[in-house]
Image 1: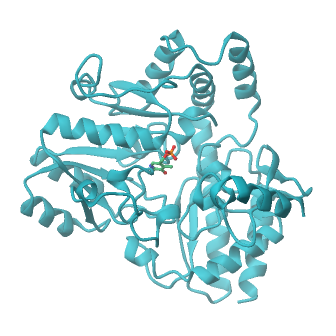
Image 2: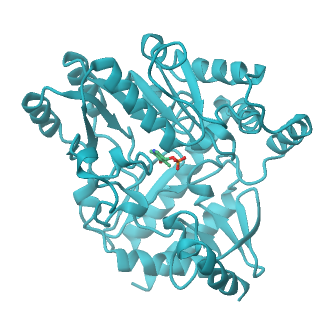
Length: 417
Ligand SMILES: *Cc1c(COP(=O)(O)O)cnc(C)c1O
């Protein structure tokens, strides 16, 4: 197996053989050769229907023709300048048009940078220090938020190397629990921000209870706390304006990434003008990056967002509803009681009988059983993220036949249980 050889070789030069921990699974991850539409192809000649989709960015599938062409044209003109370009204005205007809370935008290189900067800005704006984050939410790999994160970090202790002086200002709350946040806000008067994934996508997939996001909006507003929606996954996915549009709740700041870059590295921080103008150089809150607003990423992002029209969202809903419907039937028909969650193009099966409302519920899932499910799907030509605590995604390129085939493969696995 070429993948096995490459993984052995990679492990000599790259910690764990991968550049991001969730990519590693036992006995070895497949190494990619290329991707096309809904499919990813490995170096051993296998192909898989891809529900990982680079962990979120590829809503139009792999190697989207329009994005490729736009990027090729830009590459001829140069790939980095360190001076402003007109396309950044175009993309900023597009983000502002689509995302309800966005009045100004700063482009950065990753979701991690976006949340790091959003938290700094919230602290500067309020003159307060503490932040509330939710157990199992993931806001990137920087120190302030690396406390009970989801995703690859879930289940690991807080990372060594993060000083407690940093995380002492990060307070945890369970998701979907109004009283918990209420009590924290009453007990602490130094809270600068609440940062939340409006749909949790890094501990599987957990949707907010009715009214929960509205509650967060009200309590933060009343207490001079900045509400940050981390829409790095849900932005441009759940609706044109993200989860804030879908749930009709307006945060003060939003962080974006993944889809925004059209498959290239990019993130953004956006929000109310009065806050955004505090960012350097118009204000004094420092935020900078050599590759911020990179012309290749910006070009890809423009092409991506241009393609996400009304029809795209209804198609994605249709596909998601179809596949989730099939999976739920399979779970029921096999007399199982696993929990299927999701919305639009997001879904996950939790191998537990408990309702899934927060981190604690998610952690009751049987990860050995998930592991069996993952490997069975992989063997049959379906690639999902290799962790119970990631979310599966559907792209516009997944056709009904592929969704059907996927359901059949899930059925044959469930029948064996
Ligand atoms: C992926 C993700 C991030 C981090 O983005 P990177 O581009 O990987 O740094 C932050 N928040 C959420 C909700 C994410 O899913």
